[in-house]
Image 1 (spheres, one colour):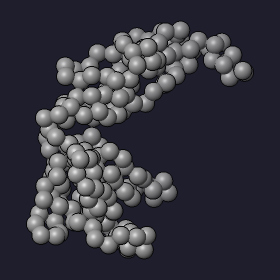
Image 2 (cartoon, one colour):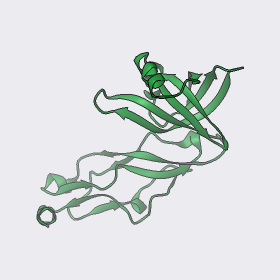
Image 3 (tube, rainbow, N blue to C red):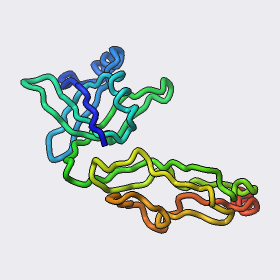
Image 4 (cartoon, rainbow, N blue to C red):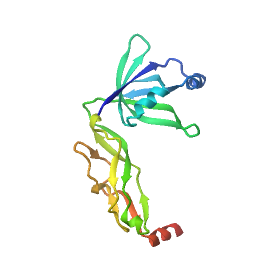
Length: 194
């Protein structure tokens, strides 16, 4: 996985009024934490961050933190991204420091492909999960886990234990958890009625 680079500024002014001023300037308040180091408040240029995220939200980022006595480098991954639901833009990011030599745990989105046979024949496709918890080395983090549902028949399901993932990737979500299933029409109607 390619490491993206992003210049950020150390944030010395804290408080709601200062944060609103930053947002008006196209900057977003963020924080870096983890790896037993002190949290580091920073500001990120929203436009530059969006360019980085074109490679995916699970991208590894080398932050060049400017301000203070010297530029420091922090290798991070986005942990939590807060979105303004009305304006549909990022308003805050929590970055977590990572060690490229140590496995990390995180959630990865699921991407379903194909059209289920069972759904084509009148069954109801039910997505029980939209992400999976995984553990792997940072360079092995996928943007998503793809699941082909083309052969999924009515009354059948795909459980976590049925998934095949690339080597070096460990799924932490329970084996017996149902990822997706196709309920027969009558079963789905009965569930709605109850």
